[in-house]
Length: 157
Ligand SMILES: [Zn+2]
Image (cartoon, rainbow, N blue to C red; front, side, top):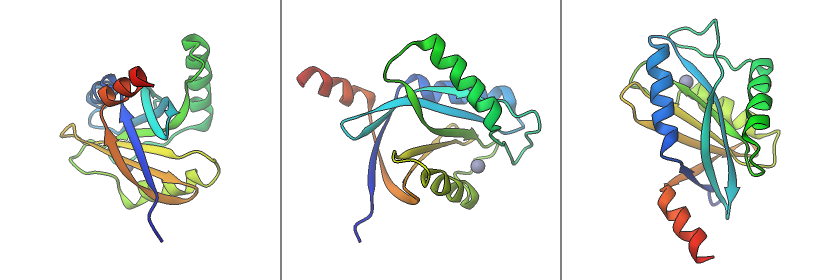
C-alpha cells in the first residue's frame, strides 16, 4: 500500500508564536490548538492558540476539552474569518526531543473521528519543529511547503 501524503504550510507567524509560548512556560510543557484551512490539498496553519494546562509538568501537557473549546469559540468569534477552523494541535517539549510514541499514537487516534487530516506540531527546546499529520487513523507522510509557494499559487489561479 502506498503511504498517505499530506502537504502542510505554516504561516511565518506560527513558529515564532510557538517559540514565544514555549519560552514563557519553561521548564514546563505547554500547548494548544492550530487554526487554519485546507487549500488545494494543503493544510495551511495560520494561527496557534495556547490552551494553558495548570497541571502541566516538564513532560506533560494535557489538552482540556473544555478549555480548548472555550478558547476556540472565543477566538473564532473574534477573528470572523470564514475559512478558519481547527486543523490540529501543538505542544512544546522543554527538551530537544521530537514527537514521542505517545504523541504519534494520540494523533492517529484523534484523526479517526474526523474526515479531515490532522496536524501535530511539536516544538522542541532547540526551536526546531516536528510536523506530523494523520488521516483516518493512519500516519501520513508530511511535506512542508513554504507560505510563499501558496501565495504564488493564489496569484496564478
Ligand atoms: Zn509530546
